[in-house]
Length: 186
Image (tube, rainbow, N blue to C red; front, side, top):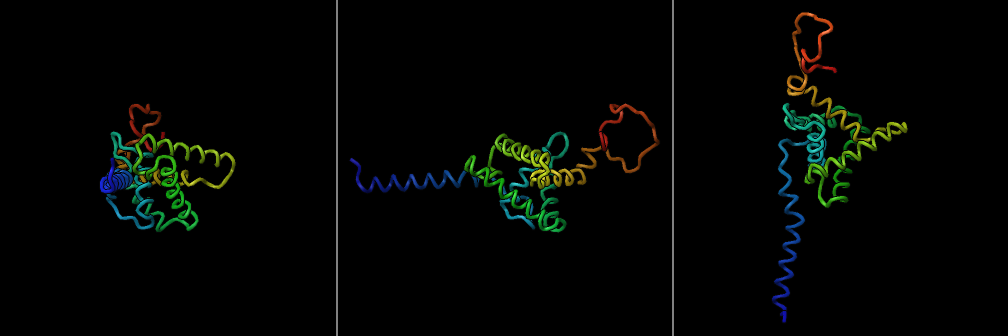
């Protein structure tokens, strides 16, 4: 027979496990940001960091995180964008976390890469549908644009991902692309 002391001990252990179960994996899965956001809050910055790395992942060239693309986007939101577009991106990054919590119970940055890709694929489809229907731009198409600009104007993007030659040599027309390698526009 269960006495009161054993019941309270079991309840305390259960509550402790529940609290660790919900807070522990999320806190452990989210490494601290390597930069301090200026326009975004911490959750938005984490979502941006994860999204940028999914858009431009590390391969034989550095990814978006190594090229400091999230910092570029944050700085762009803080200093360059009109308030309406800045608010669109901030609200979109907040929505990413809300959708991740609704679907999987954790924030976007804590999801597995395939779960993150599933959410971003849905946003990409929504953005394409909005474009076809002549609706206002979806936040994800704006975000992809700034991530791409940030990456290819960064030093790693311009010098390693693209074939950047600041002082080009002689002009040779009709050269096979295989002979040139990577190029600015293909």
